[in-house]
Length: 192
Image 1 (cartoon, rainbow, N blue to C red):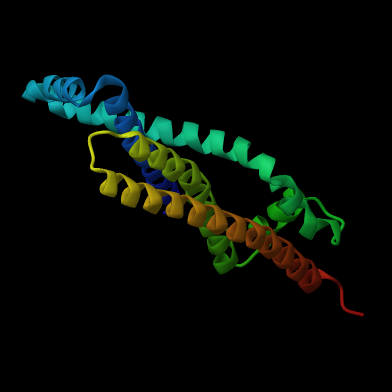
Image 2 (cartoon, helix red, strand yellow):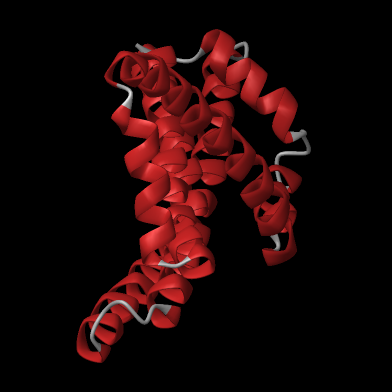
């Protein structure tokens, strides 16, 4: 289940990246030349299944690349500081606390931690994807000004919302790991 969820998550990140990359390609090449490329790729009907597999593989690879890039970029937003704060009081490293919680924590806690990690990754990548999509939309001449502004502002709003989703979940995730670790250690402490 966790592997399937991660696979889908990375595909979503990659597919959103491909959306704005396609728009960027149209901006660079022009609408007619981009349409010719798509038509030539899909004209050979016997190649469509192979192209679909290649496209899926590219989507997956691009999703992982963006995930890596976004993780590195978000270090600039104090990612490490947010991560370390809850563990300083406990005098334990995050890695130690996480390992103990994953080894000895209840199934529901482990499920919650994994879901939070998925949400954090998607939100972090969505900040970049929606910001890039907004730039592509604002730069497009193929859409009317009203549509460009509307879709561009929706994309900016989605990017800002994704940032706050990331920030909120990121902070909460590490507090939850620390609280789970503390509860686990207290339950294992010998009673006096």
